[in-house]
Amino acid sequence: MKHTLVLAVSIAALSLAGCKKSEAPAGDVAATSAATDDAMAAATPAATPGQVFADTAAASDQFEIESSKLAASKAKSAKVKTFAEQMIKAHTDSTAKLKAAAASASPAITPAPKLTAMQQQTLDDLGTKSGAEFDTAYAKAQTDAHQMTLDTLKAYSASGDVPSLKSFATTLVPIVTAHLNMAKGL
Image 1 (tube, rainbow, N blue to C red):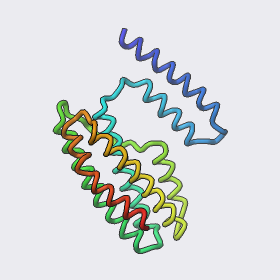
Image 2: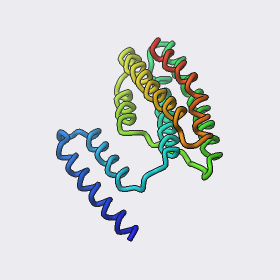
Image 3: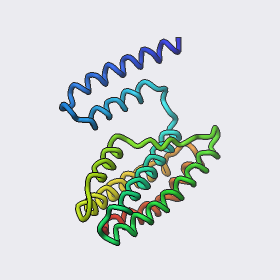
Image 4: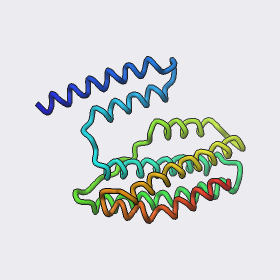
């Protein structure tokens, strides 16, 4: 019975995804990817709020690391390159702390750092830019990403369901606030 229900939900989700694909302009890879991601999320059993938070935080760290690696090699400004190096270190450290907090949950949670379609699109766009154009785009991407992360951390620290992840979120709020202010100053 359970497998039949999962199959039915999967078929319905894929059908809806097909509808969403027809609404997207031809060649709109981001919209198609988002529709597919939505269908996959609908077809899988609901994740716990702790798992969703851990996955979101892991994806945020992964985006920061990957976009900052690009900046370390493509940025024109020394200030942007220095910021990028700081972000690589800070988000590598954050990932380690997240994994420790998630592992101490009961039951243990394993964060999955899968980038969202929007994060991947931003990363792809950054890859096409260079020099001052890259610096401007990277600064905007960092400001936007840190603001979204800060909002997520504040929400989870206020009402999270896993004590170790809630503590992790609370600890990171001032750090991400500082990163956001630094990004705004690029």
